[in-house]
Length: 465
Image (tube, rainbow, N blue to C red; front, side, top):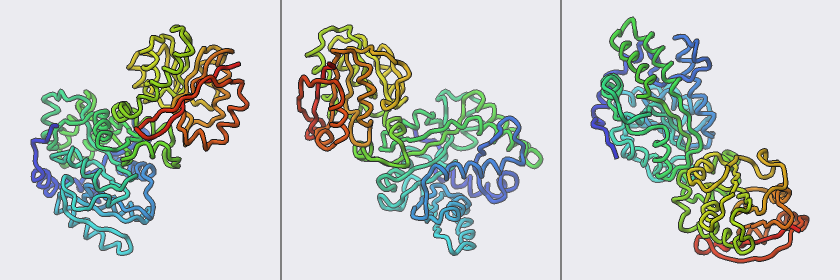
């Protein structure tokens, strides 16, 4: 993993010495954030601070922070956002920063708000002085690119979050690792950081750490507008800095620099999380977040389920060119199992666009569509399939059994439906049995097997009469 050639001492010195300079044109309150603009084309300098505040408001709206939250403001600077967060929600905020000057500024400001639950201390993002699971939220803005070991800082953010906690942050990103001389001089060397993460590779690393990345934003255009306006604001007093900001705009335009936003949840038990009905995140969001590492994490303990399901179909449907619908295709494990058996006319549908992107790369489907099984499927309206499979789709917190009626209407008379479900769900779901009674299906076979070594499953094969 790439580490910065710059040290924490370099960053500390940079921010200890530059505070008054930035206050004189960027933000007199001492915040160093970028703006989130309503009108990118026509925004003027006087709208810059408004846009910075708008970004704070957007992040807060996505964070789920309440009066019961304990928030770590990672890289709190002069404490403005920490104080604002506590004022807005009543939450407790602990702010840490590498700059002693800024921490002292934050402490002084906090004294003006004795009713707020605030604490500030000097600390490194790579070695946080807190126990595991100390916070409900880790919040960070325009900070992590400065950290000399960003991978370690992200690991620390994961460690100090409680299970189910939220990590919400923005950071500078590097769309390309091939940095040209201009960008190296005016962006990376000037700001003391190395090109490590693109928008997507950041997401991949967060997933590997144990975060579910529920939302990302590419804010490149907003970063460009921010530096365009900052150049104008700095011009009178600091013409050299203004020129550097113009070069940063050039670097953004040529894809040498970007700005990314991430909202993540710390999830150790992915299966419990996916089955749990949560108000904050819907099922589509969850599967989108899981898509990148789904196959890696479930390959050994779960793949037997699609294999058993495909084998069950093969026993009753020998025609390899039969039209098959994989309902709830996910990353395409069922499609792979069918293709292994020689089937070559497989259509897939799934709720999650990101899961379908993974499935597409496997090149085992004739076509893939995004759709919700409980609703009419836009890509097909006629009785056209010789077989349908729904593997692990009808379960706790997932597709409602009434979707089986939709699917049955697409199945030819004499066609086969393979339904693979958890045994406990099959035994407990009244609505599943009510729907199965209504459908013109005859059960042909039923087999039990285990996933995750001890979780019993049924693979049921029905024929439409």
